Amino acid sequence: MSTNGITDGAERAIIENMLDRNRAALVETARGLSEADARRRLVASLTTPISLLKHAAAAERIWFQRFWAGLDESECDGYSRRDEGTFTVTDDESLADVIAEFERAGRRSREIASRFDLDDTVDIPREGKVSMRWTLLAMIQEFARHAGHGDILREQIDHPAPR
Image (cartoon, rainbow, N blue to C red; front, side, top):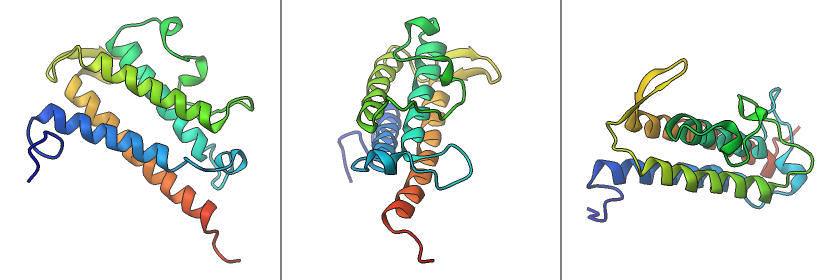
């Protein structure tokens, strides 16, 4: 059994590692795609490989920069009104740009989260009082779900079903 705190050991190390694994898994669903394939609409919604990453970057900013750090939206990395629940990617944003944005937001989230104990709480609109533990677990769930969406989209892009 591992003793490096990644798959066993301290609760915080396990939680943070699982979140980082899901962040990386989400990025891997889009890495290496062409710009056209990253934007390819294969479902009725705006869900595309690139839009999943854009949405995830917004989730990082909203939960950690806005709610936990208490920053005004103007102080958040790359924040725009589009953060509020959209999957919109502009034509001038490349896949590499959006991956970098997501990775940058993740680094800032890790730095902000490190200032708080797992049991520290903050009041969140529509959620009420939540702990840092709850927030980290919610992000694990969010990114795991979207990595699964990304896996399915990538499978459809890489191996289209016969017609």
